[in-house]
Length: 325
Picture 1 (tube, rainbow, N blue to C red):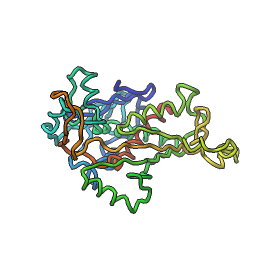
Picture 2: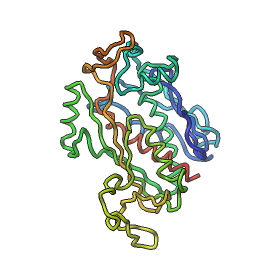
Picture 3: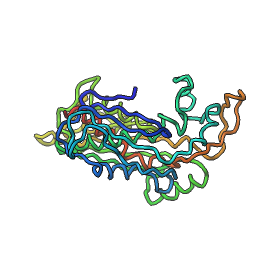
Picture 4: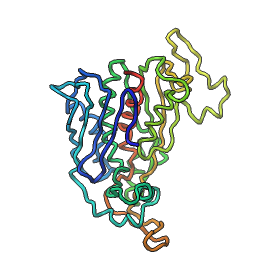
């Protein structure tokens, strides 16, 4: 469904080429200072413009439709709306019968019996993450009251960990009409010990629900993640070295038994290469009943990972807000 959360509940809406898209946020405390300017920093990080990002330009100006009065939240549901301004919908009509490989075109058509808005990927488009980023701005404001700070950054692009080589690998992908993926690291500092529940509402469970809702994220690790499987317990354990629970190492990523232990949260994310390629691909054509060459038109990111850190920060903030209110 399109709604997540209990105490801090978000409902995203809209499509890539529809009239607009956004989010309704319920459970926002009254009296939280809020204004259009509060959204600008995170929205600007998500915008295209850098080499390797889509040439589609949108102003992405948020409209506070409800839940705000005189510069403060009212306690009623906060609705943030973004209007689409720059669409070229004709680029997508041929994908109805000739769906893109590794994209949602085919499964969306099956699920919704062909009634789905396929333009620009419709509701499956990465553009819908605007709603997540907007909700993340509000969640970060709530978490700031607890002294929690969230940051995400790129650690790897196209298999390259050396930042000085990233421009080159992006340029190669653009020239080759191809795409690359990346690895993002996200940290949350200041999360109070005791947040979370065992088992089904563990911190990892709630956060993972959000993390895997970010388009193109296919893998998540907390702390040392899969690398811990190669360690012995004596190497993987995090010795407690002070009364406040600080640990010598942080292989657990700040979480024990599904509960925050007071150390920094650490998580890694794999972001897939964008499936929309301008180079020829051979894939099934439903109209002819055979595998045929597909050339995707439209405007797409050669490296969506460049714009992913702020979306992942938002997901982290939305997830942690469930435990804070």
